[in-house]
Length: 445
Image (cartoon, rainbow, N blue to C red; front, side):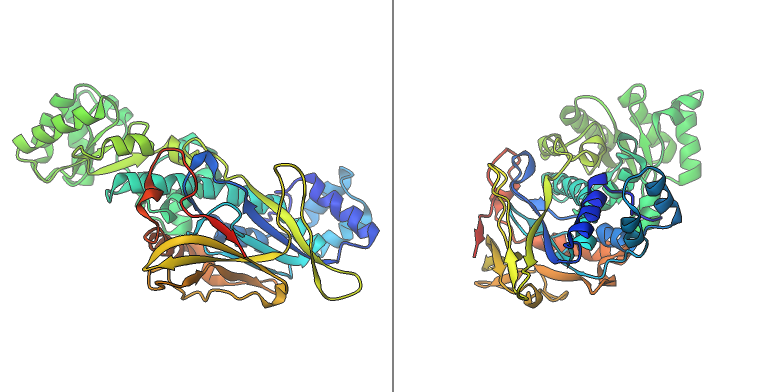
C-alpha cells in the first residue's frame, strides 16, 4: 500500500510554492529530534525506524492518489507532474532502532532536495512519535518487572494498525510476546493467549470450561481463575489439570495479597511448578508494587499501547541546513522562536562511556554533511568501550537505497538485541519511576 497520502496537506502546498520559487530542488538536511523527554522520563527508546524505512520505500503517488489530489484542487498541474515521478533519492542517517535517546539527540537525519525530504515529514513523525512512546513506556515496565517476562495484550485499546505497531515496539523494548497475531505474522514476534472470561461463562460450570481447555491445549495451559471465586477455581484447576498445570491467570482483585494467597494454595495442592500471571490494568508502577510478590509473569494492555500517560514522544522534523546559492557549502539554519529554538547544522551522536557505563550524550555538529562518520552496524553496545565513546549514528538509506538490515523481522530482532545491550550501559538511577531529569546530560560539541 502506498504511504503517499499519509501526510498533511501543507507538505504538498509547500512543494507547489517551492517549485514556483525555484527552491524545490535545493539540497537540504532535515533532522528529527525531541526537545525534552515526555512525562519526566529519564531516558527514551528509539522505535519505529524500520517502519519509517518501509514507509519511504512505499511513498509513491499512483493514479488514484494523483486523481484525488487533482479532483480536490490540492495542488496545481506542475506539482502533480512532480509527484507522479516522486522517488526518494537521498540519504537517511540516524540512531539504530532500540537505541536510547535524550533531549536533542539527532535521531534521524534526512538529506535530499527540499521537495523530496519535506514531503516525508508527517509520515516519519507519525511513526516515530507513536512507536517511541510505546517503547519508552515498555522499557520502564521491563525494568520494573525485574527479569520476569511481560506480554503485550493491548490490541483492543488502540487502533487496529496502531496495535500491530505497538506490539512491535514493546517487543523491541523487551516484552516477551504479544497477543496480536498480525504482529506475530508480520514481525516474527512470539504470540500468546488462551481464554477469556467469556469462555468460562459459555459453559455450565467452571470445571466444564477448564476441562474443555485442558483437553484442547494440554495441562501446560494457563487457566483464568477469577471469573467467580478464586480459591474454588484454584482447587478445580489443579483437580482438572493435575499438579503439572502450567499457569493460572489473575485479572482482578487486590493483587499483592491475592497473589500470595494463590501461591500458598497452589503449593499446598502440590502444584509447586504452576506459574502465576497477572493482567489487571497494569503499568510500570503497579508492576513495581508487585516486585516482592510471587508473580511469575505480567500481561499489560492499555498502559503500554498508549505510552503509559505519554502517547507521543514529542519529536519534531526541522530543516537544519541547506546549500548556499554561490557555493557547495552547507549553511546551518534554525528556528529562533521562544521555547522552540533549534540548533542549525547536520549532526551525529556519540555516547560517552567509562568502564562500560554511560556518562553523557554527545551531539556533534558537522560542517560537511557528506562526510558524516557513522557507526558500523557491527558496533556493539556491549560495554566494551570503557573510557571512550560509542558512535550512535548509522546509515539507513544511501542514494535512495534502503539498507535491508534494518527492516522486516530481522530488523526487529537486531533492534531488540541492541536495545538490551544499550540499556545495560545506563546507571541505576535511570530506572527510577518517579518524574525526573534525563539520566544523561546532552553535550553539544
